[in-house]
Amino acid sequence: MVSQMTGVDAPQSEHRDLFDVAVEQFEIAADVLGLDEDMRKILSYCQRELTVNFPVEMDDGSVQVFTGHRVQHNGGPGPTKGGIRYHPSVTLAEVKALAMWMTWKCAVVGLPYGGAKGGVTVNPKILSQNELQNLTRRYTAEISIMIGPNKDIPAPDVNTNPQIMAWLMDTYSMTMGYSVPGVVTGKPIVLGGSEGRNEATGRGLVYAVQSGAAALDMDLSKTATVVQGFGNVGGTAARLMAEAGSKVVAVSDQHGGLYNPAGLDLAGVTAHLARTGSVVGYAGADAITNDELLVLPCDILIPAALENQITAENADRITARMIAEGANGPTTPEADKILYDKGVFVLPDIFANAGGVTVSYFEWVQALQAFPWTEEQVNERLKQIMHRSFDAVYEMARKHHVHMRTAALMRAIDRVAEVQRLRGIYP
Image (cartoon, rainbow, N blue to C red; front, side, top):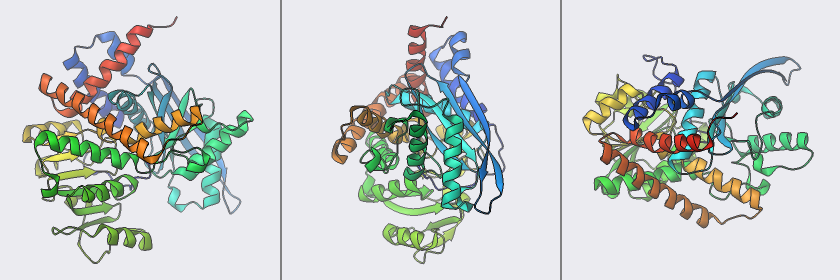
């Protein structure tokens, strides 16, 4: 689960139903596991899918109807968990894929959650704050039959943030008649949010990179890093990679990118972004496109934008030794094969960007206990989980001679399948 990632348009040459990609990845791992046919049937479907079409009153008095979705993939391990995104490209197929990936993401790091996801097909950047609030509250009312602190817990994702989670929590609480802080995570701290949540996905990603670098005997102080997407996840990851000693040579957002082989001044880029709304135009680097950024010479590539960025068309031109997926689904199965054959070490999304949902779990626990943790406690527990999960996935990959995505999926699917077997089928 990721919050406010900077969007990048997916390459237009490859149009695939994202849920088909998710199922294909599942089947690859299921084959290696030898998963039985009945369990494949259960886990390759989403348990619940809700589509809502709802009116929103705009500032000029007109009414627009928006389409939203909430999907729960599998509730066997516990309450379902997953973000809500606002983006023009949101489709039911995308939300279903993201819900399935959330199930695996929670399982691979050992959280007692199933996977869910939600989204509204909208460009939130053209809405006023009042229109955004109206849309959020109406969407929340429409999906309230599915969510709850012990049922399904939303969180921020692309183009949603703590304020939107606050409106969602308040709307749900009003229908219940009392405050329910545990219904969402990623809230403002004053409403029960967790210290460290805002940076959790990017921080967890860097912990994953550190584990990967140790396994590959890479010295981060001698590496060059490229980051696609300079939103919450990519921006945090870039800063923390620089603090870890890596030279960040390129970053981008939906408008384009920057490249300086000598290393970027990230503080300057961040200030320019705050002033102009984009990294484009920063004077201390050369302008590049997002397509060019992916194939720049580097040691570590962090795609932290949207899905389907690394495809069969560009995978063979990628020079990075390690790819750490900050986004969900940035690499297609065809590209995975090419990268594996090239010896590129991929830290897959369901592991690498699990820091967000992990700290969301911490936030949920704190809400249930009404007992906050310090940021140091949050970060230390996150580090332990990410390092421990890497070790387990890496061992699976070496044991079965598969790439890390398949290994992570195997670990996750095996856990969820065991839960399903133990619980059985009701009635």
